[in-house]
Length: 470
Image (cartoon, rainbow, N blue to C red; front, side):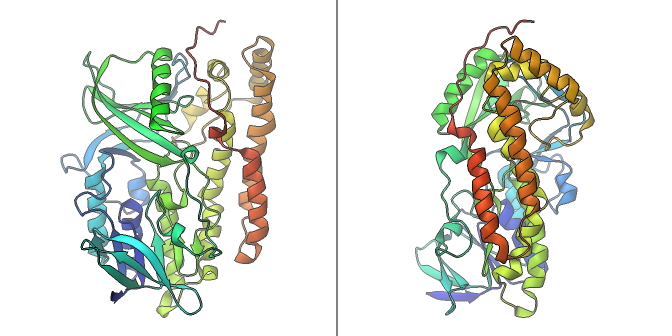
């Protein structure tokens, strides 16, 4: 078995792996990336991805412009819809979004990493880790295109392999990082229908229907769009939900040009990302946004923290222990991690209420309040926003009295949704500064997430809805 020596080996060369490799190589670390796909297919499971325009200045993403083969379109309008679409909530302060051809965008990110000095090994499949006499990771074993096993020695291995989490799940028991496998109830089975409107209309803005987890977004085609749905359990279940959605919401007439399918993570983030000589990143660490499933920008936030910490942890040839890397956990969970935990707690509970109840709350402007939607400039905000308390309480009381809301649904909102969200705010604010307090914190987190439960625990009863009166 051949061997080569690096400081850092990255498992997976898509967006997150490329970005981390670039940041590491720029600090002078000898960095290798092993990627199972070929150079011309890496990251190519979807055609179009959307990234907010501000992320291009927040992170060192490749510059894109019209006509470069990467840039597809730009839009700055989005609207959140009720279950029947009768009570839209325009987000007039919505952030501008760039549509990109994903595979070409990932190829450009690969090139930025290579320019920084990272070495890419395409067509290579991760197999296992090697360990020193103390049981700490000191290398990676992979198979090349010819099936021969090879070894790369390293001081740090980064799992950026996505949902399969190949590196994380190959860790020894007790290494400090969870090894669970994502199940069908932890994933969104995403189906994208690229459509052409037969009446020739243009759709250069985004609409979403949270109740069904469906959306209509630009595709780059003047008279077309992407009609998407994300569902738990299976693609087939999502197709059934889509049929009910189309009976409740009047869509423009269209024909389907092509269909793409893929998976998105809907699971709380790992409690700890790090072990001796190891870090887990991106989808492998369950870092997708809880309100829309997007993974690239949220993962890059963690990469920025990690790159800063490893610069010190690996300085002068030092081996990065779990304790040295722990600041990545602390800094992430006191910022974006805390925000996402609060939002995820809310979505897991709130989206269990009935379509009729959700329609009523939209109609009375209780959720996604127009006043607040007009004020916000961040479409990556919480999944629900409320107006003033007095109007809110009055609307809920009337809804209960007139049968639009059930007592159990009020309890879901007051007794569980808000309580769980606040509980996670406190929990993640108290994330331990050192590994020493982690076991106690994990026990509290396990109890909290058990109380929260999962949206997928109860299959929503999607029905054809009638006029809601009043």
